[in-house]
Amino acid sequence: MTTQAICKTEATGSDVVAGLLGAGFNGEIHRPGDAQYDVLRQSIVPGFDSRPLVVVEAYSRSDIQAAVRTARQYGLPLAVQATGHGTRVPADGGILLRTSAMTSVLVDPQRKVAKVGPGTRWGAVIDAAGQFGLAPLAGSSRDVGVTGYTLGGGVGWLARKYGFAADSVIRAEVITADGRVVTTSADEHPELFWAIRGGSGNFGIVTSLEFRLYSVPQVHSGIVYFGIDNAAETLKFYRDWSATIPNELSTAILLTRLPDSGTRALAIKVTYAGEAELAEHLLKPLFEVAGPVLAGELKTTPFGESAMGGTPARYLDLVDTLADDLLDELAKLPSATVEIRHWGGAMAHPGPGAGPVGHREATYSLIINEEVPELSAVLRNSGRTFLNFLADPANAKSAYCEADLARLRSVKRAYDPDNFFHLNHNIKP
Ligand SMILES: Cc1cc2nc3c(=O)[nH]c(=O)nc-3n(C[C@H](O)[C@H](O)[C@H](O)COP(=O)(O)OP(=O)(O)OC[C@H]3O[C@@H](n4cnc5c(N)ncnc54)[C@H](O)[C@@H]3O)c2cc1C
Image (cartoon, rainbow, N blue to C red; front, side, top):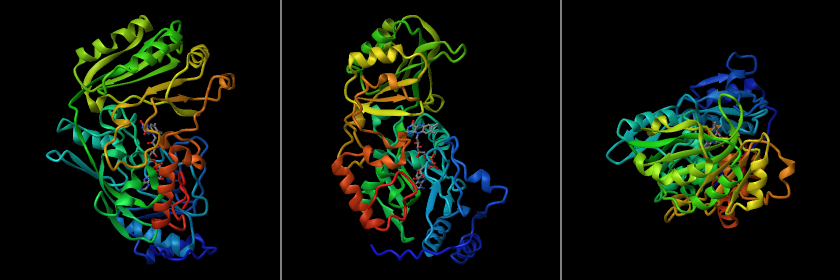
């Protein structure tokens, strides 16, 4: 691919506005001092302070093309943002392109496929698909953007049964670094199709995404809280028990606090894509070891009512085993929130042609919400991460195996040789 040379200039906000209008941009343009500028430059990361030259809200694919062409014309960096749930790199002095207004959901219940615009949040897809007894592979929050989540892999509560959200993508429309519109699928631009299904926003701006939905009319799910006294034994039992359960059952075990009193507690998160009786039967031995239930319950609901929050990752590792000494020390922690989530199932066996979502073979993700120096002797950091949970955007390579990273860099060289799309979890050409 040939790309227009980047000509770096000292462009002013007025130059960029003129450039955008000249390129046919029809959306909203916000400059410092405008009422919406300070609202739209935020991400949900506390203390994030991006200072773009302009924030532009696109209403159409041609607005996005105009923004890309203008950024290239003036040699400006450009960042893409739908919701701000994953924006960690500021667009200082550049163009912040918001896709939030480009929301649309089309559900084809016969084909079990949804097609969304780039600003769409999961809640809209869950509601639209739920009318047909279908579910998307959404995660812990209805507010997260479908596109950013899916391009970063996307691990939800149906992942053990149906895989990562990225593995269910069947087609995308992408605006590449030279402003072209490209449709990509298994048959069209297959290398680009491979790369976007886990390689995040490194290869272009996705303007529409098509993906599979699944027949999941109801789930049995919720969070159940137990006392902390038996935590070490329960964690060890969980490790052994989780190796025996079917892919319909997704679980996580947490060291946390009771929602009302704040008392230290052990919690178990559950989503079972099937009948309540079977779920209760499978969970019985684990709950028996955990002890009397202090709060919470499992309920049978439509999939759309079952979302459970996650734990922000200060420490993140993907592990194959959970050693006794680690579990003993975790159980003694006085305050940090620890979430151990069971992976495996379809996540590890995606079928042929799957994208670069890394470290699929991991058995658990281990997340701790704060630095805990006293754990240094027992945390055996594998160096493996998952892009969507990775707080440090400079460490994107830790989310991929070596061979996939090399292939991602080769696709980057083909589609974005100048690394125009670099304000993200960046993969260098
Ligand atoms: C409360 C919360 C819950 C979460 N739960 C889960 C979960 O259960 N499972 C999981 O896997 N992840 C989860 N995440 C992580 C989330 O998936 C990522 O942060 C994701 O990047 C968010 O996408 P977004 O579009 O909402 O965010 P944004 O901040 O809008 O975008 C984040 C990045 O996505 C890329 N991007 C967004 N739109 C486009 C586009 N149209 N074209 C190209 N690139 C684009 C860009 O690189 C951008 O920097 C959660 C995050 C939060 C804050």
